[in-house]
Image (tube, rainbow, N blue to C red; front, side):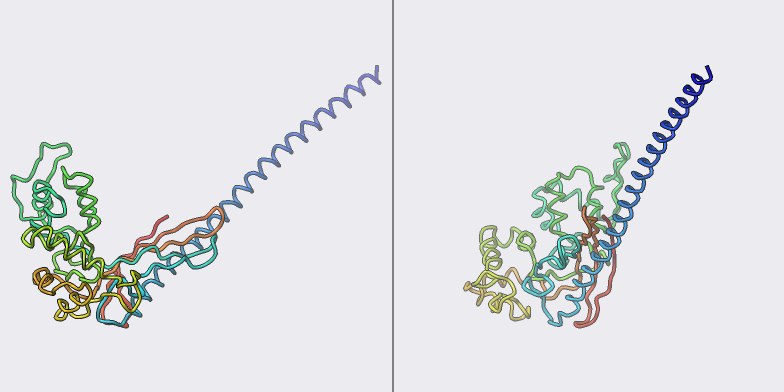
Amino acid sequence: MSSGRGCRRDGSLLVMTLWVVVILGLLAVSVGRQMAIEIRLARYRASLAQAKALARSGAYLAIARLAADETEHDALGDDWARAREPLGPEDFRARVTGVTDLERKLNLNLLSDTMLEALLGSPEAAARVRDYLDEPDPIEQDPDAEPPYVPKDGPMTDVAELDDIPGLAPEALAALRALTAVTPDPAAPAAVNINTAEREVLLAIAGPELGGEAAQGVIEALMAARPGPDGEFGTPDDCVVTDMVEAPATLEACTRRPQTLFIELLSKGVFGVRSELFLVEAEGEAGRPGARHRVRALVRRGVPGEWPAVLAWEEGG
C-alpha cells in the first residue's frame, strides 16, 4: 500500500514538474518575442533618427548649392537645378528629390482673368477663383450649401486653399497646383523667370491676344532651345537669357527666329532672369527595412554668395 502511495506521489510531482517546465517555457517564449519586438523597435527608432539626419543634411546640401550660385541669373542648367544620384549606400542614403524656383510659376493671387481662363480652360472656373480672391460680395456666399460656403475675399496664403473653392474640376485643381505658387507676401508681384518658366505658364502669359498658334510656335521654339544644340542642360551651349534688355537678341540667336516674334511676349513686362524663392525637397533612408523621412523647405535667396533664409520647414515620414 505504501509503495502505491509513493508511486502516486512521485507521479504527481512529475506532472507538476512538467507543468512548471511548460509554463516556464511559455514565459520564455513570450519574453523572447517581446524582446525581439523591442529590439526591432529600437533598431527602427535608430534608423528613423538616421533617416531624419540624412534628410536634413540633403536639404542643407541643396541650400548650400543655392548659396554657392553667385550669378545674377538662374537657368535649368545651373548646379542647384540639376538632378543628382543619391548620396551613400542603398540602406543609408540622402537624396535631394527636388529644388524648384517659384519664379517659374505664376503668382496665384495676381492672376488676371485671361490667365485664369487659360490655365483652367473654363470661364466659370476662373470666375469661382476670382470670386474667392476679390472684394467681399454677399452674392458670392452660399450659406445654405452643405457645408456652407463663404469665400475668403482676400489673397491665399497656401495653394492648398484651392480645395476650399467648390465646383473646381480635379483637372483644374491639378493645373493650378502645378503652375502657380503663393509667395510669403501673397500680394507682392514676382517676375516670372524666362529661363525656367514652364510651357503652360508662358502660354498663359501670352494669352489669346498674341495669336494662339503663333504664340505657341514661339514658345515651343524657346523651350526647345533651352538645353542648346546638344540637348543637355548644364553645358556651355545652353540658351540662357542673362539680361532682359538683351533678351530678344539672345532668343533670336538661340532659336534662329526673328527677335520681333519674341518682343510682343516679352513686352508683357512680367519676366526676369533671376529666381529668389525656392522649394527644396529632400529624403533620407536608413536601415533594412528602411525608415524614410522627408523634408520640405521654402527658402529665399538674397545677395549672391550669402546663405539663403529659411522661411518654412516641414518634415514627415
